[in-house]
Length: 116
Image (cartoon, rainbow, N blue to C red; front, side, top):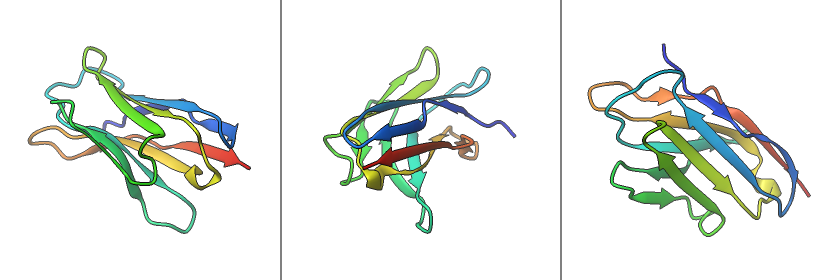
């Protein structure tokens, strides 16, 4: 099964920034929505941000004003710019892609660790 390829995770101190990227390994057509979830240890996976093919963006309340989601349709890539990071942002971040008539495709996950 196709998996998306994620990059950009890592460790950073509180107040720092990271930029996550996610793209399919090959061509992928008719992408509609793209987005990011995260899962912290002992917690449920939660939606962080999403962006539609009409550039409609949604954010979790906890990241509004700090995170920005964007997409490059020419590269089938979705980005998550994370600024003013907090220790509570520590989690594994998973990207996804939605296409008509296909199941959701996920990335393998990338670890983000924010130290205080």
